[in-house]
Length: 292
Image 1: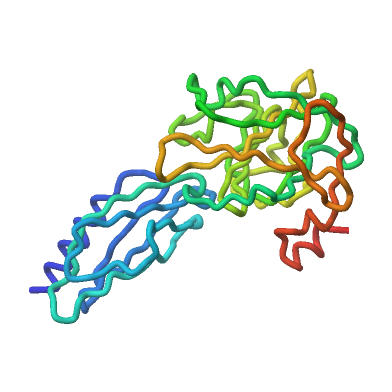
Image 2: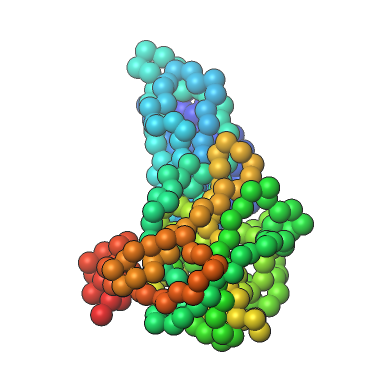
């Protein structure tokens, strides 16, 4: 009898999450009544899964709260709800949310970002007055963006390691539900700390840059696309506790020793890409491959 009950519960749980979405969660009972949770990430980039339990019976949830799990593309093991030895099988209700960035990220405000233009080049900084169109007709109440001006066609480089989450050319196509924002001529990367960085005003080569590709600090990702030679950089992430995005005020490297500061629109800067900074988030093997 218990095997029939377990099979019925398994089918009900799977049916509840059968809708097409980035991350699908399955809860399968084993022969002793433990419930094993797994997730399938249908995206080409890592996603962040939040599971919130209610009305737990005959088991306990021993994972740290809030439960946020970075799920890689494909199949992921999550956790097991173990059946209380002297009780019936576990029973519970739960909700899931998926995020494109880490909604509980602990941002390192002192992280040294590379100025994303060619090493040795002199660049100007400008105040970004508006990010209209970043998220449709809605502009966040509080936001921050860095504007850098060079020459049209200048090469653009990654400020930090990341995974390509979205690349957009002159126009957008496809279901807007899957967009990271509404800007065109942009490249968006998921960074190692779980934040997202968007480079706006960039033309990319689709033969050299694809979604899911790992990018290293100092690697060329595109070229300045507009006639004014303006590049806008935004670093942002979701929040578990609010519906609005949070924006990061980055510090950029301004010397070959790795000194970094928030860029000031009143003075020009020379671009430095020191290997010590580029290699901060690389493995030794990646350093041997990518650094001089």
